[in-house]
Image (tube, rainbow, N blue to C red):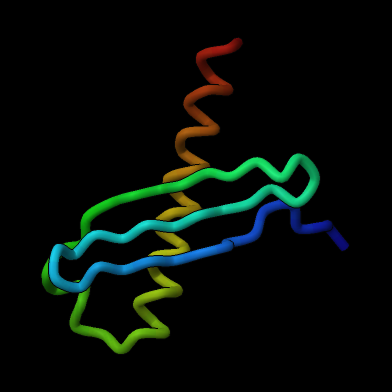
Length: 75
């Protein structure tokens, strides 16, 4: 079984401004990555738990895309 190295630490959603902030912590190095982005108005129509999960997935995809970009640049 693969060990999970990253964990979502905190998710903050500002419903008025539609801003989302996700903090992700690396278990080994204790590094923290904070991802901030703005949601579309129609994305706020769901209940809190599905919205939080979708925001966590969006933040993870942003971090993975950034990591892939940096890997391709360093080669």
